[in-house]
Image 1 (tube, rainbow, N blue to C red):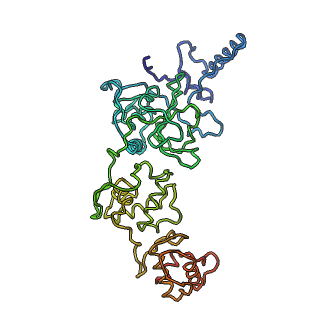
Image 2: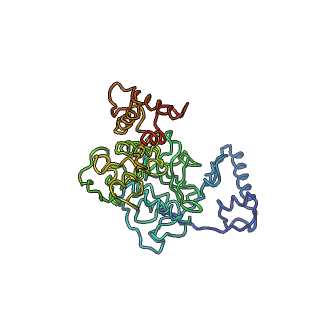
Length: 434
């Protein structure tokens, strides 16, 4: 079966009524349509004729495929794309070099998301008949062809050949959600790149997609705003396990010695950054807290990426002597390797001010905490005359004696209620050590 070649049509009417505006988007004109006829009225005649035929024959009229436009009340029109697409073509369009037989070049999840982010950052305009500088068509299927680094421009009718079908629970960043409608392939099909779940209920996810006016990254209901039950999940066949092509963090620290990392392997850059919500973010936060970056967290660490994770990661990277783009707060393979192996330099306790050591963060003084800062706190309480609650110690494990000593110190400052809860904050710490 040959792949259809699509062509854009200019509307014959410039009527601004809602019906005309709608049908100009979804219905091309045909030679049989009288010039100047109101498109909405012409559509109504077609539907009426179909209904009449069904009544006479006694059979229900066949379902008409809905165009790719808002199909649910309450869905913002701005969230619903209009994504007509072109057919298969080589890179740089029909005049480019033919793609040849199907090839599945290897790539990684991190590389797929990185390429997608480049088009998002460039705000590549949506245009089904134009090709970006890298040779890929500026529509939804061309965008996925680019992100998967395919040898040519595919369309929704052929992208499935490069992937294997998966179920919803298996979705990971770099996979795609594909809706191909043979009844209306130009205007009735769409494809997006899955960027990760935004909530634990798996009802919303981050979608990278090419749509008007330009490529975007947006939280989207699963599987899509409309035709949700017709989207199919695919995983790229050429997905590689190794982070080939991923830019590693530079090993600038003297302590960052090469070696096979122990612990959890680096999951890929796509699991970190704005919108990320997964177990690896939690694991990253816990390792950073253990390495001295706890002061950046007021709660957590948890599975949802936050600015606290970025600042804590950046502090760890800076402790290795990295700076500029090498200390951007996003973990790469080398940052991860240093954390899981316990190598590299720890984050220091923050800058001192007038001889007062930097406040390490509330997470250091929670039930179950066991660290050097609890010991320092306890010794300072004893020194200030608030150590009567200790029967032994002070020691590194946070306990009731520590809390009661801090509370007594806070009350001595004239604080009451929640301000004297026994949990040291930055001001309690400053006064205690001043």
